[in-house]
Length: 409
Image (cartoon, one colour):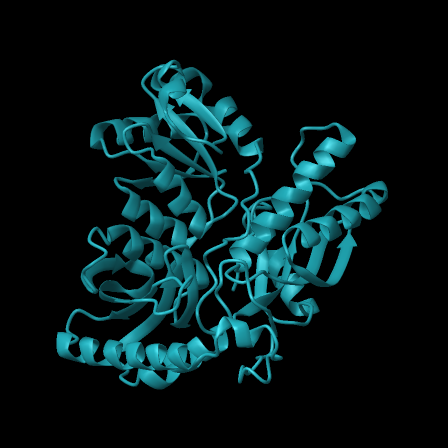
């Protein structure tokens, strides 16, 4: 079991870590604040986040699950009664410091077996432009090699990234930038992040691009570079991209016109791995939904009696989540599908929706509480199934993680 421990109290954090290690938890990462927790979660998946009541909040739990949607969360409390006073939902367990010595192992194992309630599709997360168009704008607008990575995000999470960052780490940085923005009226933010996976400190330059259409959300443009990069260069590159995004957004047809025109008539270039969507409920229009090939595997081989019920459950979840299911293959050791997310969804949302939803439905149908799926998954933005080589890579990495799996985007 891989655990992320978040506790702002240094002595308590190290004391808790010692107890957990004596209880047999060897894969343990420590975070003193939510920013460190986000960066650790951005580097690799965790089975469970153990959060002290001093750090716990609904906002923190939401932020962590923007990075890893199936993350189990347990709370460390001063006593058993304190857990009832915390206004948190969708957590998987509580453990008092007093019971930590005697019950850490069983309590955390039980928390890991609990399900994470599936989240609904983000209703305000559809970007004002097709994802392919925003990716092209980043490619054309960021011309200096000093800028190593560029991201576009909404308040609800990452939309598109370009550079060496994995989607998981890019999502973590988007969460950090958004939650550090204490004054929404200020258009630019600058901070430093230590990113060991990218060899040291980086400057994070973020610019908020105001939405001009009704029902649209502000965009966050985020640039990462080395500390030696001049602020004038970052400002110039960011403003160039911002101007292109504003111009492209202003040139998009009205919602009324988009109801009668096809995607091609709207001037949208539908890329490989994406399908065009119509007008969404919140009034945002001209959005491109992302299509993923995704695979995950069960805790134990799936018996043949489960294959047909599971297929029916996944098909119902696709309808309920406004997803287009293009391919589905169920074997004893693997579930493999190609599906299109609703506008604003990504591979993290897709995995949570289908994995957690199907586990819950199968448990209800067969009257069991046992976990169905291992944590983690393999996903690639594509409209074709994963190749045999990719499936084998996923299974090899899963075995190396002790059947934990990993997200690969």
